[in-house]
Image (cartoon, rainbow over all chains, first blue to last red):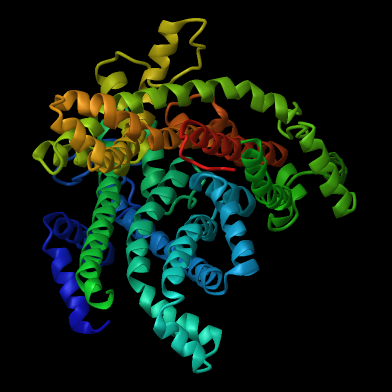
Length: 288
Length: 315
């Protein structure tokens, strides 16, 4: 694909009101989490025992927590944790899952059978349980959370890419590279992979929303990134024990978390629809 | 049919074998010495040796694996480190609670999801359809633990109608108490699955509505209610059974988060407890059990689907 191509797709995605709102929301979140600490005068660690568990006010828009810390500041720092973990986890999932899918689909036969059985094992437990099992082994840490969430995304990439490869495997341009003596590795990574980018891209966006949800769930269960790193799941976990004292404490972090998940999901679905339309529009020329 | 079941079982065996080996090997993947992690920092060498012997870690690896697998096959999952009770009994105590929640949540999910799907499929792309699709997106996008917190805030903190923490009361002993305790967790989980049910059934209904027999039924003057209620629904429900079954399989372990919100004493909370106290035999037992049930329900759903759909050839 070239630059004007991607610009066209971007324009059509942003033409959808839902996707536009999602992008604006996510952009605000990213910018706020980049600015906080130096350009935004918000401190997530400053304690104020005179103002504990207070509701929203002019000084503290989202209220304060059980140590009098500013909830808004912690939510924005939590965005950093969430977005970075999601990005890292999706990267891990793609780096492991994409080659598995490529090899399984490209070679077929026993390699396909073995690789897909491994994927089946990963799918033999619901994602959150698999992540919990990983935490049980690795202990609670930033790296553990990253790996645990990342591994749960591997089957999705492997399956999507495998399906895509199977549909490309017998196409002329792939067999042509084979006939010209291109190596399998070259063929897989330089010919097949570049033609599979659109379903992978859609999965990257959708899986980031899943990764954020799993990371938050782990933190809510007390198995995520250990405190004092602010994270949305951890804030909801603490907020839940102060529902009577400060009802808003557990509301705001959840609101931001939910909007983030919904935005990424909307964006992913819109992207999928736009790419599909484009595909359908282009297809009749090539097929008799 | 028997052949079909056997073939599916044979496909499952390697998956189960690899997965159980993984679960067994878990303890070896723990960074550092797992025994030191379990007994804590202030343990004497004698205490460490005792734990090591109890876990069988002083034996050759192959012996350990085979005896673990052999015991597991006979239903012996070892003793919990925390309170020295058999892991099997600890799990067995929690099963009724999780099953009861799973069934209640499925009922809620069906009660909301099926009408949502039917009303959207009757007028596709209308404003009704669009707002109901919005419902599904919302039901799936809102994290269950946050939804649970919001429900607690409304029904337990403000209205004071329902308890914030849900105890397990068997439905057969006290239907009223069981309902009061289950309502909020079942609603939390049920709203989530209603999104899945609605999306799936809507797609399934829309697919059926395009079929020839629908045109025939309409052209012979059947009212739309009968076309959908008598003809379309029956065919659309078939694949839907699969999804309902898969969701119930998910609930065996997937109620973890909801159980945690409502401090409900199910299997999921047992697993969380086990993980936070690093009780490895209990962790392994829980995961092995959940995996087995999950895989078996999946198989059962496949078989059931083949059984109720006469068109599927499994010869």
